[in-house]
Length: 345
Image 1 (tube, rainbow, N blue to C red):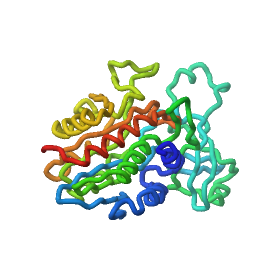
Image 2 (tube, one colour):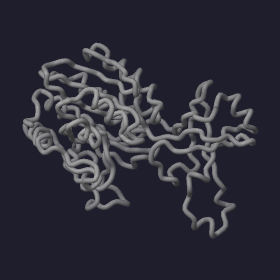
Image 3 (cartoon, one colour):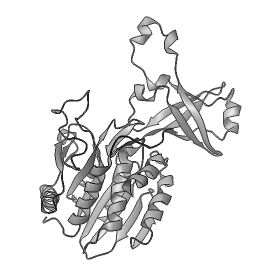
């Protein structure tokens, strides 16, 4: 079941630059299903199903946003910087896991108690630079004894959970949703072409793994499986995001209001026609914010026709992201059917 696969992926820990924990899950899932699995210098995990000379790349980033230890003071409190885009109130008073040399250590992100805030302080914006992590230590030496040093990666301490019906919540659904979709696609698809399933690194820090892997593989076209923001809950208007959860995967026509990517029109037609032919529900989006691996892939070498293929996911870049399993399943179905052919580029 894709739900249980997503549970394992969401509960795994792998911030940008430290994605190795995902490798074992992906390797185990795809052993015997692909012709080749290899890791490149950057840490991208490249899986291959060999076919003819036409090469299609599907990229999905493994990394989640997180934190990293910057400084440990004399009283054992830990200062950190972010890896990826965090909104400060989302982090305040969260429980975290520090992945030290001696194993996982639990900590909490602290700040000045609300009861002690003066009126003028309450009006001020929360700033991550004022937060710290408390692991229960009394000194820097105590922290060192726990195996925590400068450079230790940190993730939020949350577990995947079922909501009502086909909806689930968890951390790192951006982009373990895309990873799950790519795994299932590589397991199920049969294509006359050569398919690269590339699980990329450091997307949250600038689309880095996608750039290097696309350069080395030089595919004829590319799809990036990722997540996107729906406009179906309080606090956001449909005019700002027209897609909804539960109504199918999303073809992203434009990302970051054109500053990121304008999807190749032949790629759009290919996926749209496949969806229509197979009665698979899809949505289309013109987005104002956010980029995917497709943004950098389409600029590699002489240009690679690319499109983001996303799943509507609520509360992105928080520890409580929400997704509809049915959208992921529909996404897998569409990719499996599309890969039986190729875009008419």
